[in-house]
Length: 469
Image (cartoon, rainbow, N blue to C red; front, side, top):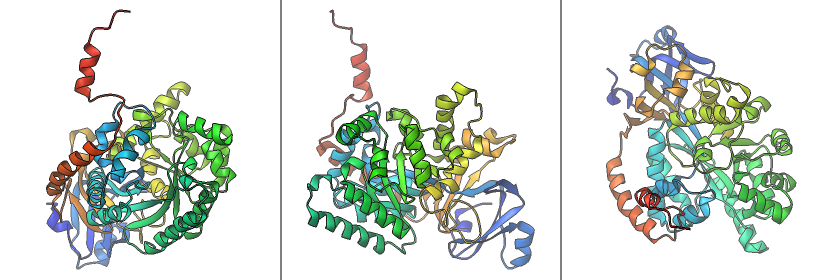
């Protein structure tokens, strides 16, 4: 019988699931050898048995072994305020996230990030791309939280300089710190450095160009939010005569190192610039549903060969629901109008939640699919449930029926991190108790401004009779 004791081993593991999800689709009769944090062999079970007679296979009947999912855009230090953003209009970062994150001390940033990382692992994400924290002391805390939970993290260091008003010494310090940050984490097994500008207008053209050049040279990602909200596009047009993505192009920051979050409001010209640049995109369908002004046409990006992954934007850390949202949102906004009933097929969203997402995150040579030499970042998923019986098309079924409570085990770098939703080597409930106390303190003292009250009060207000004219 499958058990955490059997899987939680430093010794080589020969895993024999009923189905193995390969880039070309699920296959039966296959097995993997996990050794030193990597997939050492991926082959037919009979061949691996013969090659390793001293290893007893871990049989996994009615189980799928699949790549871990990749969240290409999130904010780990925003977990204290998850439900505060519900029902709010766009650009909530100004009224909720900036004031809330600014109150976090190092311990609070660590707790927030650890809670978010735990949620991500529970949702099937073995890799997350953090866009950078606005906590002044939070960067090292985020890195520590990622290591302690065992999640793979592309961590952004924010390099905004728009408020420095031409202070060249201060701008030089930012770039020196950025270079140091990239070098310091160059060989970290779990935390991969990245540089970030919150939005193009938060930095000078010189800083945008320099940051993008640094990341291109070092083979890392340059993260920024572009063309997410009408207000941001209009501010950019008024200030510069250019839209946000056009600003990046004009100053030389739109290059193959860029990972652009959202990119929902693109003109044909911007789509052409994006295609030609080699930049990648994080498609955030839940964020579009909950607070956006538009939805990215991810199917068009796929056609044009633009690398893209799926991102949560910190909305909810549930990988299966994210794939479902990606497909459903694409169908509602594009497919219905032109009679496209498949919108790329279930495989498209599964691919871009795994190896496509890893490529967008700049980690395509390290993780994202099950292949010899890659990091052993994977999920063991229970398919012995009514929703998957009978099974006719596992790709589609995972996208539309898959649920995180089916995830029995989560592995990152070959190590068992979660078993049936809970960590195997640290106390998650103790973390939750501490978070409840610290979050109440920090949210209470943060100068947060919400447009709508909590739902009970909102309901009561809506039920009040209208005032006479």
